[in-house]
Amino acid sequence: MAEDIGFRAALDEAQKGASEGGVPIGACLVSAEGKIMGRGHNMRVQKSSATIHAEIAALENAGRLPASAYKGATMYTTLSPCDMCTGACILYKIKRVVLGENNTFVGGEDYLKKRGIEVVNLHNADCEALMKIFIKEHPEDWYEDIGEQ
Amino acid sequence: MAEDIGFRAALDEAQKGASEGGVPIGACLVSAEGKIMGRGHNMRVQKSSATIHAEIAALENAGRLPASAYKGATMYTTLSPCDMCTGACILYKIKRVVLGENNTFVGGEDYLKKRGIEVVNLHNADCEALMKIFIKEHPEDWYEDIGEQ
Image (cartoon, rainbow over the protein chains, first blue to last red):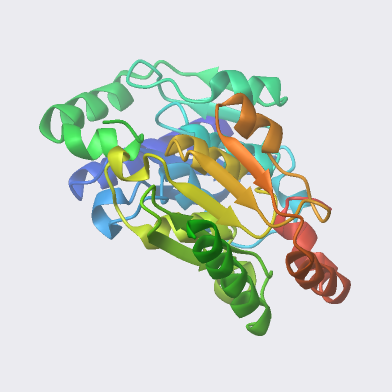
């Protein structure tokens, strides 16, 4: 149930990002009790931001919280998390990261596991299709977003 | 020279944060040519933010940039960077992280080195004093900022 809620919200955020002309990556942080704590999408294009990736947006949207609030939480994201977002999940001791796909990009999955965080790949075709279209149309925005080229 | 400019700006940011009642950590990103690209300080208290740590603020303040702009850059920060900020420096392939001190907190220094980033500790007493005062007066804000307690 929480799996559905979290992933659907993340995908919905990615689609919102796409409709805004932005990097179509969405994320949603779900508590141990299955409630949405925060959600958001990549804002590089929309806010000319170098740091508001989807996972960062979801954590920011969740607001200030004590460490206990993150206990047992899951970060749903439509794409394998970059090194920054990997680190953000480690900082707040997120229990599990569920990613939509990693065919487009492989981020810090191994390091998440090394730091004790469970990683699940949903191999979702919708997430991958969003990225494929975006990268074809705006390769420069995408490579800038991952610090390449 | 760049060392002076970058560290002074980071410390100045930390002092601004202190004067605002916030977590007194500042950062400044300096280019290979010795120019300030972006600077900022922790905004947990001021903006009720879970993600605007000093290094994130400096990267955000630098704006959208191609990967080439970060080449040879140094991130100056008044405190050893947390896992999120460590990951942000890795994402943008920052060349060097110069930190004010790590007596208050030890972040991802080993991982930065493992990922090829030079780490320099200035053992600066002013940076440490700012944190000592803040943690004594607002321990709950500090532990929340590092995802503890």
